[in-house]
Image (cartoon, rainbow over all chains, first blue to last red; front, side):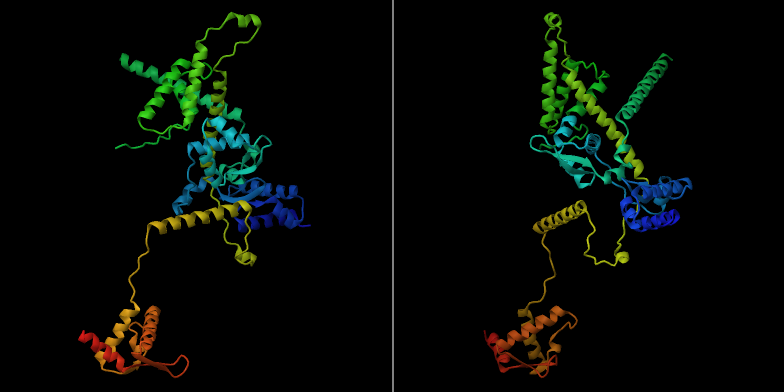
Length: 199
Length: 257
């Protein structure tokens, strides 16, 4: 059986050639080894690259790994060339995507109930962008299509797995704090303007 | 002249309502329904005046708001309390919906931030691996989704092309016709005073395939009319073209006319 050093070295070369996320399963098949062992090798490599502060880091996307550049270096890359930026998503696309991500598998009807507005076109757009896909059919009347997010979604939004999605409570907490800050700031500004008038 | 404006500020009726509630500095748990309903309907009116096409969902929420408003105007009877029924605030359902909506609006803001952050790390797209695999180009290592996307792209491109063809006409420099070339050949024999020549000397531009072929068909046509005679001694050899008397006679008849 190949030594860990050999495997890690091989994984590095394979990732280099492959470019796209390389699945743990593919590598496990090549070495005829357990997926868990290969996964650990990937993880070790990832840590090594991270710790040494290399310009290339390893990104995990749903049990697959790929080389990407270090975020901090974007500025330098942009001075060398202009990488194509992904177009921003519209507000409605983001809202719809948020609902799909947190409620999946979800039907169009359920999404529309949350947003209070139809979302056929937005969904078509998300499907075309490869962020959302059909994942099956609900057992309810009419067997409506169920939608879920794709690996492309994980990749673009920097999640390793769906389990990485932050808890909704955490997001709400952060939001509430922001609101409080805004209120407090308003109060201060109010005072200042009053003082100014008094002068 | 009427014109249409499309405002994208509000993504839906909830978006507008949440905006109005926050703008009025109300708590989402204690909405002053009467005030907010007036504002909401005012806003819809304004948008209609601006000729903005509103989806029916905006109207549905307006109706819901009015229903809640009217329910709240009804006095609470004490009989309910005696019977032990719990008074349910007519706003409860709406508040729950708005809360849910706000939750996902917050999530969408988080997602946007994450996407921007993730986009700072660049990946290299997979290059053509045919060189490594030695497999034929036709080999498709696509999953069904990728294949679907590729096919859809192909259909889109085809549609665009058809649209383009329907609206635009491809124009080309007009090319010489057999008739013109035949007249040219007739002219050539007459002015040169020759009866016989090489086929090659009848072609003005020997590098242009079209020119060669149009001359060739002209010669064939003139042979059919018996104004020319042509001979080729061996395969791919020189073609000798000879003018018959008819060619000269023909010219004369035209002159006479």
